[in-house]
Image 1 (cartoon, rainbow, N blue to C red):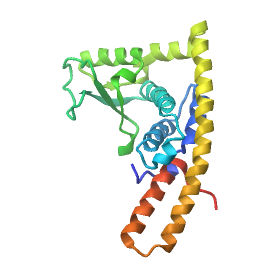
Image 2: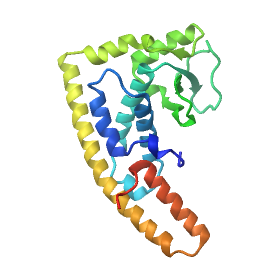
Image 3: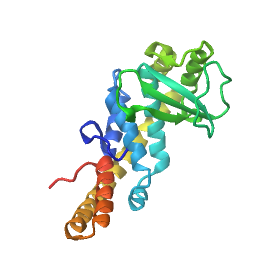
Image 4: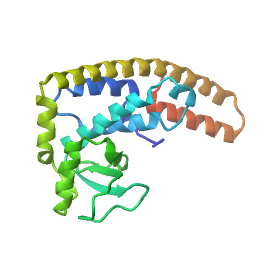
Length: 226
């Protein structure tokens, strides 16, 4: 993850803005959706604990869940099912696990980093249902058509309950963008401090560690402006 190509990635504050825009779009960008999920995962790997304290992990988990649902339902791809705690995928038509996770790779991707996973309990029930139908038929490859019901309900539900949920998510996205912007400023100050330490440090091992921390910050927050 630390070697993520910055040309193809997004910063955490950009992720929040993109998802809010995405909820009103019919054609999401596969690269942007994947990069958004990757960026959230990187942000909570514990790179800088002092920065993580400024971010609401539960709120960003909610955003990641929404992004993963959009990824599966918007792009064709291959996927594997794993039982809880297992590193070996289940064989096709095996009993669907009570708990576990999905590993999904979009068909039109050649990046190892685009193989993403999510806990089964976090994926939308109608998406899981469609995947289980495919699984029962001996398939672990899906297309956009498999999730037509989910997309129609997501875009077309005008009920009072759906409107309440949309308003809640709008407020959640605003909160996440605001806190990401604050953390970005902290991250960039930290990056400059580390850069100064690198310039004055004579120990090669220490320099290597400092540069690694700088790269980790760049992967989530981008390079600070000069």
